[in-house]
Amino acid sequence: MAFLTIQWENLFDAQLAWESLPFVLQGMTYTISLSFITMGIGLVLGLITAMGRMSERDWLRYPARMYISVIRGTPLLVQLFILYFGLTVIGLTLEPVTAAVIGLSLNVGGYSAETIRGAILAIPKGQWEAAQSINMTHWQSMRRIILPQAVRVALPPLANTFLSLVKDTSLLSVITVPEMLYQAKIIGGRTFDYMTLYLLVALLYWVICTLLNIVHERLEKRFGRYVA
Amino acid sequence: MIEVTGLRKHFGDTEVLRGIDLQVKKGDVHCVIGPSGSGKSTLLRCVNLLEIPTEGTVRIGQERLEFGKGRVKEQAIRALRSKTGMVFQRFHLFPHLTVLQNVMEGPITVKREPRAHVLERAERLLDKVGLAEKKNAFPESLSGGQQQRVAIARALALEPDVLLFDEPTSALDPELVGEVLKTMRSLAEEEQTMVIVTHEMEFARDVADEVLFIDEGRVVEQGPPSRLFTQPSAKRTQQFLAKMLEASR
Ligand SMILES: Nc1ncnc2c1ncn2[C@@H]1O[C@H](COP(=O)(O)OP(=O)(O)OP(=O)(O)O)[C@@H](O)[C@H]1O
Ligand SMILES: [Mg+2]
Image 1 (cartoon, rainbow over the protein chains, first blue to last red):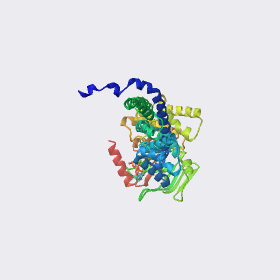
Image 2: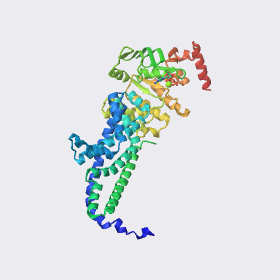
Image 3: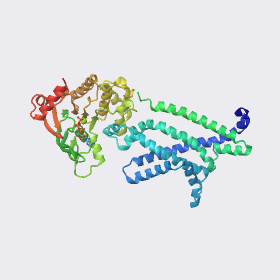
Image 4: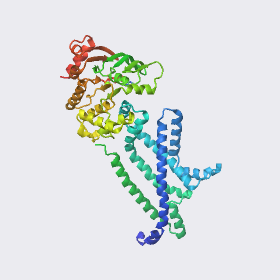
């Protein structure tokens, strides 16, 4: 049979993989730090946007809706292109990493806003009333009573957002951010062995995501401990 | 202590409260009875301003507010509300906080009292409602009766002038009703001022200084339980009491 005659070392050259590892791991520092930084900024944006989206004031609600709609209705890659290449037309040249931070943060903000809003709305009205009955202000109720409960509801979808984000950082290779895939492409080009490098990168992504999943499960237990 | 006059509440076109007067002296217990949809909950919610009355005045102690004459300030609402404590039919404890934290939350977050001070009071209150040993439990691990007693402690922690109860035992399994009523009885003995919406006629008869029968947003009849339960003068009160008596058989 044909595939038995495949030369496995053409597909994955372990020697090369091992030698390229330090170089690819350098890229991984970008992958990981950009993921955490943009998740952090994105969550803050998402929280603010969710509040705006639920506000009774039109001038807060409409922009929030528009922002969410645009982010969710356009591809991340196109958003990154616009930030990195498009803005030069109006004389704004962003560093690759700057464009990456802005683009990914805005993206996470748009997606997490809907998650956070849904989680807040999922908390029963009785909780607001009980908070009000002990004379909390709207913000005290939100901060002390509603958000802590909403975190539990939002955690699984936010964990998904984060996993997508980690994997989406690979898109940054096209705007020359030296993250994992970018590094792999460089070595691949130099050695004419793309396959080994891509397999190596895939393996590394998979390891990161698996570790993150374990963290997620821990967090879920921690936040859910009050549920009988 | 409490004085409500000419209280009206509209929801859109429907008038739910049609001019209610209520006077409760310090240390008195008033029980409110009446058919479903008559406006009992709305009355309580207007007293602690979870709903803003359309018209009328509410006074508790020195705090007085008049409604229907322009916007009332949030600050004034909160000042009046701070005189009240509310116990809901479905408890509404904060599920992410322990029993002790539930009780301490108001004094610490809202009144900014020193923690040590609040802790001592919270433990005393939990002891009073018979749940001292449950202080580190989360609400969802407790029975309904226990949860409601925590809710009472939570309301008491803010040292309100008046406690408002909205059918505090209606959501409980029958065998758990007694423990909550017992707690409420002991509060009545300590002269805690209370307004209680309830269907527990026996309890009302024993504990209330005054019973109000409400129907269609009006106080149809009111008086001491000894009179209202035995010789109701209004026809509707008689019918309602007869129905309640039948239901309890
Ligand atoms: N937020 C609201 N919006 C519109 N209508 C309301 C609202 N709250 C209460 N109502 C209406 O007001 C009337 C009185 O309600 P309320 O809850 O005060 O009655 P109740 O006497 O407490 O009844 P129950 O014994 O069933 O608890 C009902 O017809 C109800 O549908
Ligand atoms: Mg009611």
